[in-house]
Amino acid sequence: MLESITMPIVFNEPLSFLQRITEYMEHTYLINRACSMSDSIERMQAVAAFAVSAVASQWDRTGKPFNPLLGETYELTREEQGFRLVSEQVSHHPPVSAFHAESLVGDFVFHGSIYPKLKFWGKSVEAEPKGTITLELLKYNEAYTWSNPYCCVHNIILGKLWIEQYGTVEIINHSTGDKCVLNFKPCGMFGKELHKVEGYIQDKSKKKHCVIYGKWTECMWSVDPQAYEAHKKSEKKGDNKKNKHVKNDEADDMPEVQETVSVVPGSTLLWRIESRPAHSATMYNFTNFAMSLNELEAGLEAVIAPTDCRFRPDIRAMENGNMDEASKEKERLEEKQRAARKERAKNEEEWSTRWFQQGSNPFTGSQDWIYSGGYFSRNYQDLPDIY
Image (cartoon, rainbow, N blue to C red; front, side):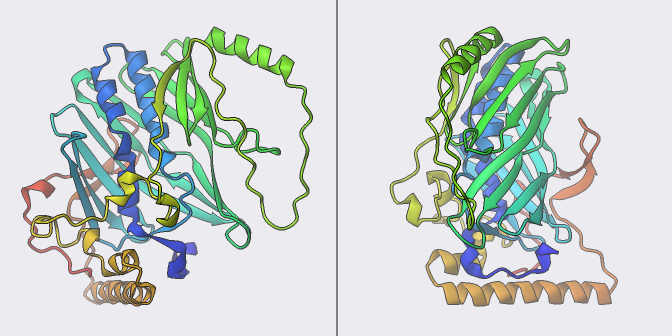
């Protein structure tokens, strides 16, 4: 029952989880690239790079985003990247965040619902990212679906916090039957595999077209499968160096980051992470993109929905460095949410979502939350008073 434990605010970062999932859009240029490719395998390469880039902002982000309040929303329009997005907290128990992004020129739709399942393992917390992510490339009438890898934060009690992502991510092109299987590797005994991602793209007859490899914290490359195998063999011959194993009593030491990605000759670069701003370490390790997400630009207040998380007083107080006020406001908002829930129960009222409806994903058949439209027509009558 992790959700029912109130964590002290010092563990948080000044963003709502709705803003955190908006960070998937940081590398939208990869979707735009996919839209411009005429070959389905090349499109899959760009989509795979996008799927990896979507979790790249987690690197060193050990602060916990604020849990969204039921009915909380977030919107973001980025003209220069060519998209707009809206998200809504559609359920509180279990917590479910639904989002819908669309291309401003009608090229793609990107949507999903995320409900991370948290498990405590003594020294670490593991998040299993339940929920399907769907990318539709409208020009090609194609739909791709996948789920994110597991994410683990180590040393929550003692030592330096560090993050690991692992598990298999399968991206399926439901129109062509092409499939990309990406293996996010656990760091392993000597940390040799830390941050590594390795996989391949195959067509519907299971023919492998390319190998994809790299690190989710750095870059992803694509290469011909034969060249990759040959490179692996020659590497093995040279790899007889002994590894020292360090005794480890207290904390799960973060492995020393090994030499970065060794590039196989003949590889094509699919994506490279952008460097973070110089003062990122003192700013919750935010990327440039993350730093802009809570900004209330001039004139925006009059436009966005009153449920938008930019209006959340606890997050705003924390951003301004006022921890005591942030803590008080967080408690007040949670209390207000509980009181509203009791009131609904007393009147036997059901909570109704505003912008998303529960339904089944048209491509996987699994349960999903589908955007019902209308958010950007700016009719914000009858929205709940959550702040």
